[in-house]
Image (cartoon, rainbow, N blue to C red; front, side, top):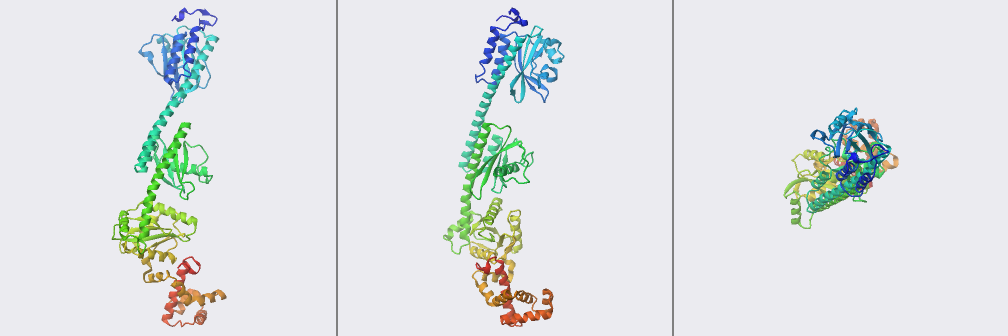
Length: 602
């Protein structure tokens, strides 16, 4: 190939006229536009074509890292003599003319590089022997966010003509297109590799799911391999499971609370963002939400959180991960449902008077950790209004929380639309058992006046199962277990036998026989004789004490007691009559506390 000195002179000033050699350089660069070459190969082709077929004997491409203040030579072709010192790859931006291209459009022409005010550039020019140079920005491609600069140099100093500049700008434009396409090819290759890697990871995870391995371990491995965070949330948006890749800060301790981000995105999609929700500012983490068990009261939400720019491939990957999460969670739900069904079956048979297969019941109880005979207590948690949908949902939440806590030795299940717990007896003092139950229920949403919590006296399973269940039902149906507190059967002492009478309707009949006329009298005359009688009996028939409790004069009290004696036809001086009336008053209040008019279900 002829040397630069052999090129004929022309009207472009010092240097040769662009001709066949320059056209060949453009052709070589153009050939890389749709070549599917890697980015490094395209860069090498550009600098080689310019250096081999034009007057520019030195050509390089530099990536500018402006925040770091350095420039990196990522491709270079050099037909000048150079030594080890001239192999420098990293330059300080302040020491080279490429600094003036930041924010500008260029090109920059350097008539004599050896006289340049940029010290590093001038020193390199003197070492290599080049003089004239041109620097041009590559308009579109960026390498890892760094702008690229094309620089060419030649031995002879002097001006660069307009046509030569136009040729170099064409080189820069064509190189920009070639590098842009190479970048797309690189992106596609990375995307394909990412898809292959993600698919392999998900395939491995799904195979492990089918083998019955721990779902939390599977999802944690997926999150770590694909560099995502995964949140599975209950229908009430409380997080059920949270995991993140190793490169993420621990959940709740980094810049982002993953569970909170997932919750806010679910609310946004539902249109239920509250005043406490985070503002509508694009977060550094984006969330892909998929609803599991749609249409169910027990819906779950699978949320995949990813950092970085949004791409079609990453969006597809997020969808794949969400599907995988759904499969893993669904498999866990099926396994849990099977276990729950076994638990519910065992508990239902435990509280029946005659289980279908006593031996099978003993086997089920042993599988649940209750090898008979073992001393236990039965606890029943039920809604005050069993037809209320919201209360049933609260019960369902209580059931889920108690089962998820997996307290040692405690079995939780469903019996007759109630949450049932069977727990080991802690001792003769029922207050210890009450404290243990309160601890298990602490923080569970919904435990309050809407629910009743009744605990039986201790007994052995399965022999005493029916008796313990009957005691819980008695407390519940009598209405004494309201208010969300735990009511123990032993807490009623000698009055416990009264609760048994509430189960077969005898309580209502007894109250009607002893107090019916007096209650109707109060209704017709807007009176308070029933209340007066209750206080009188509670004060052991002492007139002064009763009058003070009622805030009335003793003569007013005597008048009321006379009316009570007349209406009921009883002698209040008779101890047996007073005991009978006191018993009726206590049963009446239990019936009223049951919440059903007339106590029909008692």
